Image 1 (cartoon, rainbow over the protein chains, first blue to last red):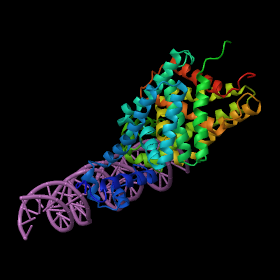
Image 2: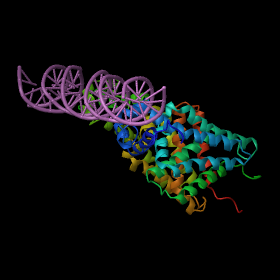
Image 3: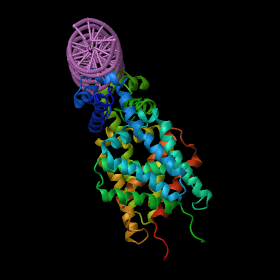
Image 4: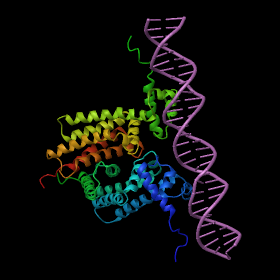
Amino acid sequence: MTEARVPAVDKRRAILEAAIRVFARQGYHATRVSDIADEAGVAYGLVYHYFRSKEAVMTELFTERWSLLLAASDALYERDIPAREKLDGIAGFIIDSYKHDPELMKVIIIEVTRAANSFGATHLPEIRRAYDVVAKIVADGQREGLYRAEVDPDFVAMWFYGAIEQLLSGWVFGLMPATDEEFDRARVMVVETLCLGLERRGPG
Amino acid sequence: MTEARVPAVDKRRAILEAAIRVFARQGYHATRVSDIADEAGVAYGLVYHYFRSKEAVMTELFTERWSLLLAASDALYERDIPAREKLDGIAGFIIDSYKHDPELMKVIIIEVTRAANSFGATHLPEIRRAYDVVAKIVADGQREGLYRAEVDPDFVAMWFYGAIEQLLSGWVFGLMPATDEEFDRARVMVVETLCLGLERRGPG
DNA sequence: CGCTAGATTGACTGGTCAGTCAATCGCCCT
DNA sequence: AGGGCGATTGACTGACCAGTCAATCTAGCG
């Protein structure tokens, strides 16, 4: 009774999801477009009907999720809660994203965020926007006198993301146990240790 | 009057150094073997006289420097100095390596250490060995009661390297100012903030 | 019914490059 | 002088793959 334009099976979506699996399994460079098509159960040419290029597929995967992270970060930043909880919220969002779709996060981290040469270069602006929110949170914390003034907020932002990416990499490659308890433990540990490192010491 | 076998110009070395420049400029995947040969001022085929493959060139670049880091880490670990100084020594070694040959460090970080798919996978064991030294330092610190016992040493090790890699990436891509003062400041900041985050709080 | 337009197919093309190899060079030794 | 051998050369081959395109299919519509 409703939308007449939407096919019973959305092949476009099928292609995107197949791409996640194949990119996660073989890496972007090692996947042929035909691999994506096969995995999606569609003809080779259909990939080019829906996407301009192999790169465009990757870009859509990244942008779709990264924009969620940016939105969540902005929302967190605006809220009237302690800096620490904002950072915890961001760390939590990323880790939840991993819990929710590990393959997609694997692809994003490996092929974009840490791939400073290829997609990392293309998407630098969006990536930096995420860093900037963290830097702003830290800067606010310094202005309120919570955090030591000597540390550069931009530096902390890079640190924060560097640590989280490394963590996810550890899970992705089985260097560290990847259970739900570990996820929560890791999240607490990053934020707690980072904040302890940043906080001004008492009166002494 | 001396070594007869060594040519006046060591072409093998020239190829390695050309490779550093070209890999740094274009990235491993985007460099053709002919680019390396041209940059070295040498015929295409000579690259294959000295190296089994393009990959072998990269591997030699990585292994040569990484083994220095491992040796330095081990030496630092054995010395009878505070944990904090050991960590500072490792951070310092890496940052000095960057100061000494930024292009080589750029290549190692981007193409190996952070390239978990390609060379990162191949060299995982060596990379982990570097992490392990940091983990051992932290574990010792915990045993001595300096550091909080709740944090997982392996986790700290990943964190430490994640942060430093991110820093170097920031310099490499011009996201952060890369001057000698910045290098020293960054080194102090990483180690100081990390240790403050790890240390046990006074009596409370 | 036929018509149109988007969906779908897969064979084919063009360009790229890693790695091979046969030929030549230059140095040293006898 | 001339033989031997590693160093050096660069044209060539074989494989691979992103992207194109003309053909076919399907569904709504008047």
